[in-house]
Length: 321
Image 1 (tube, rainbow, N blue to C red):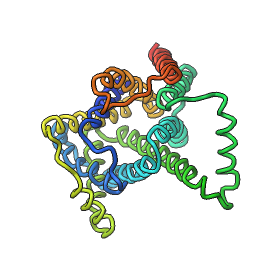
Image 2: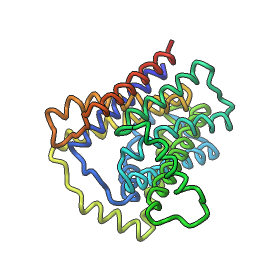
Image 3: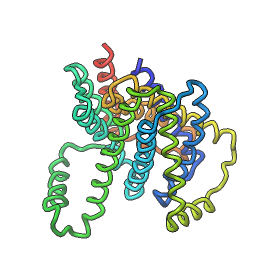
Image 4: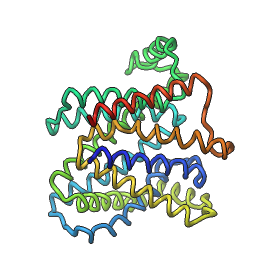
């Protein structure tokens, strides 16, 4: 069941991404502001609590609040990585490393392992997701990439030429984002194993909201948030905007539900499903709205993405059979 729930969540996320292309600005020039405005929405999750009312004890509440704060920190680091480079460079790194870190953390803290068939599906899904999310991979450039990596990280404590500092920052922030995302999902898996799903989810969202309130006590952050708010324009179609935000919230809830039901690493590895949905949606919509939705359609790029989709489909088949 968790596989179907995860696929539903990723399908909604793909749709939300496409809709956001129409409605929202492409960049928020501060990771602090981005985290703040996303975190503010977390308080509305309390409307779910009456569905299965539950109150945690002090120890449980502390863990829930910490998980919510961790999510807020994760958002800051994630958007900082996005802000420093193109999403097409950051997303593949984070998407590939998050399930790997999730697998390692789940094994260290919970002793969770993947059986042989699950591990095979895990590897196939990660490779497929990376092929879909990057623009184009040329095998003959791998040695060049390897040599550049050695130049950037060959002496991590030594001097790095200014030309390579942005690259190292990008890689460090992407790896940090993946590790934080993995840590958050694994922690939420533990919470869901000890607490009711709705209760654990809602009280952890309170931690995120407490975090955004604390952000307002830092003068520099408060100024950035205020400046960002002044620069925002109200969407022309408010009803459509609110509908998109509702679907985004529902996708997040479904993703957490799938984590509570299944293996954290496998749920994260299924991100390739989201990329597959995104490719299909953008491919058809970009023909009708070429100025809004842009997608490379060259032979090399499309061949690579088709191979990625085939691998994701194969990984899903291996997983469910």
